Picture 1 (cartoon, one colour):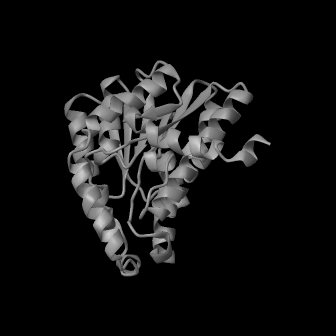
Picture 2: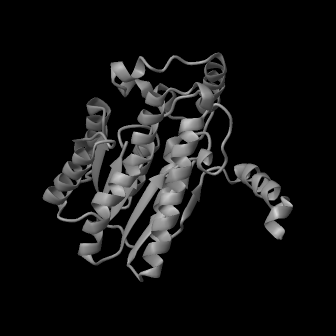
Length: 275
């Protein structure tokens, strides 16, 4: 896919991985629509792009709300006339064992991390199909979408769902002979501020996240791990490569595949699967 002069929409584009993706796509001559729930960082990214000669707009968007994703698409079409790349990247996370996760924590996490990409596909896929030219949808999952560790139940469920969503979409598109393609980003430790994602959570919702000792301990470990993680600007080119070269899997830390392989090996050792 030749992306020069085409248009990309990136949710969660104001910071972290989203900002890295924005920079990589803009560097290849794309027009950019930055979507984010935080106005200030979004405006900062748009100003940065404009200073480099990139055509860009910002659209404040809560991806858990279908009407706001529809408004995002309308704004992109109004400004640029078409959308060729969609990156469903916005995401949040909380940490607690499954049994201690409140229903509100489940809703908040899944509404953004899974319903966000579902809304994106639901709204933008028909637009891309009507355009009748090559286009690409990428969604950010996680290594937690391939291997479910402890104390991240809601996040694991949402990210496994994102992997399934994009795998299903990719196979549907190929079966239909469509010029559209799909990919999924499964990052390992990246130096982002996802550990502070509750800063954008409604007060009444946040009040229902009490936090267990186990959850807080894991979150402290995760915070330190991410601080030493990969620079988000290194992730953007990986997503760009998937778009340009039609690659489905985008893995920032292939060495972590050993966890996934061990899980599959354990599953295959179950004799019931060989009967």
